[in-house]
Image (cartoon, rainbow, N blue to C red; front, side):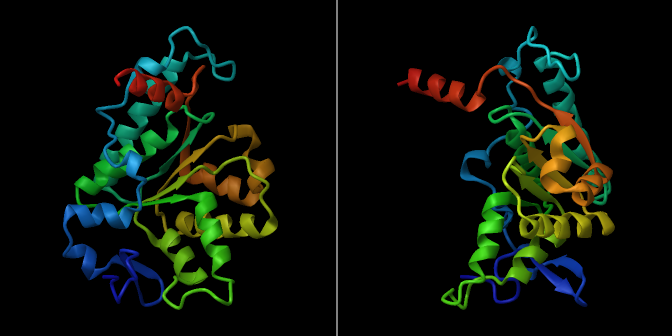
Amino acid sequence: MTCEFCGDRGIVILNGEVAAPCSCVKQSSLKNLFRHANLPENFINCSLEKFNFKYYAKNFTDPETGLSSLELAKIAHKAAGGFIKRFLKDPKTDGLLFTGKVGSGKTYLACSIANALIKHGRLALFIEVSDLLDRIRSTYDPGRSPDQLSEFQLLDTARQAPLLVLDDLGAHNYTEWTKNKIYSIINYRLNQRLPVIVTTNIKLDEITEYLGERTTSRLLEMCSPYRLTVDIDIRAVRRKEKDLKY
C-alpha cells in the first residue's frame, strides 16, 4: 500500500523546505529501507567487501593520470569507504564523482556506498538520470494517472534525499530543459550541504560541454572526483564467467 503521507518517497517536507524521514520509513524494516532507496535489483547485494580488483590490470596505464587501472581502482575503493565513515559521523559531508567508461565499476561502487549506509539505518535514494528525466516528462501528459507523482514531487525527492546517488550522468544530448532540471537538483543540494554520489562516463574536463558551466562548477565544489579505467567491460566479462558455470 502506498504511504498517504510521502507517496512512498520515504521523506516528507516540513515547513516547505526541511526534509525528514516519513513515519513509514521510521517504522519500517531494513527491507523497506531498500525499497525506498530504489536501488537496481542487480546491485542490492553489492558491497565494498565484494569489490573484485581482478578486473583492473596492473599493466594498463591511464594516459590522463599515469596510474594503472589497479591503482585507480584501489584509490576509488578507499574513497568510497572513507565516504561511508564520514557520512555516518556527519551526513553533510562532501560527495564523490566517479568517472570512467561503461562497465568500469562506477555504479557498483556507488551502490555499495548506498547499501552500507542503508544497513546502518540511513536513507539513500538511487536515481538513474535518464529515467528521472523521462518520469518528469511524463508528468506533462494530460492523460497521466492522478496517483502519479508530480514534477515538483519528483524533483523535490531528488533534492531532499539525505544521500542521492545520481547514476549515469552520461554523454547525452542535453537540452536546456534537461540541464535546468539537473542544475536545480545539484544547486539545491550544494546549498543545503546534502551529499551526492555521481557516476558518469563523461571525462572530467568535458563535463562542462554537456552540463554547462553552472552545474559543472557546483558538482566539482561538492564532490571529489575519482577515475576508474579498464581495458574490458566488466559486465561482459562477468556474463561470460557466469555462462561458463552452466
